[in-house]
Length: 248
Image (tube, rainbow, N blue to C red; front, side, top):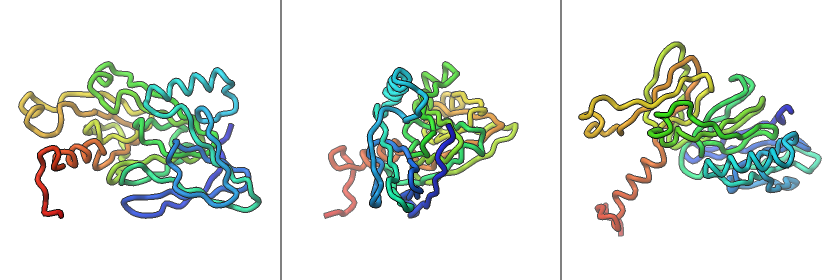
C-alpha cells in the first residue's frame, strides 16, 4: 500500500509543532497523546498498531506486542479528514526540541530511530521494532538496543531533544554518545565501543561507551538528550540538595 500524500507546516523554533494538512479522505497516524489541536471535520480513532490494512488480526496483535517491547502504547491514533475541504491537525513533541520530516521514499523506504523519536506519519507507514545486530550494542547501547523501524514511501516525522543534526556518511566513521543518536538509515553499521582507556571512561565525563556508526548512509543526531537534561534538572532541584538560584 502506498502512503497517503500529506502536506505539512512546522511551526516554532525550540518547542515545535507540526501542522499536517489533510485533503478529504487522507489520514495521518500518531503516537497516543501527541495531538495538539485539530480543525473541524477531523475525526480520530484509536486503533491497534499502525493500521496497515493487509496485516490481518494476528498481524496486528503481533505488531502491537512488539510495540509493548519498546515501551510504547499498544495503540496509535488515526486522524482522518471526513470533510469536503482541506483540514489540519497538529502534533507536538513531549519535550523541547526539533521536529524533522523524513521522506521515506527518498532514503530507500526505511529509517531506524530511537524508540521514542517517532511522532507521526502518513497512513501506510509501518512502525516496527528493530533490534541491534551486535551483542555489545544490546548490553551497553541504552537507547540503541531496541529501536523503531519506519517503513513506507511517504512522510514520517521524528523529533529530537535540542537541535537536530543530519550527517551524510560515506566510507567513514562517526562516534556518537549513545543518547545523542536519534535515527539512521538501515545500511549504517552500528556498534558500541568503549570511550577510550579506563581513565577516559571513568573521568572523561563522556560516558563509558560510544556508538560507532560507519557509512555509507545518513545519521541524525540530537544536541541534548532528554535524559541528560532531566539529570541536570534533578541534580539542581532543592529536594535533591541542589542550590536555589535566588528564586522566591
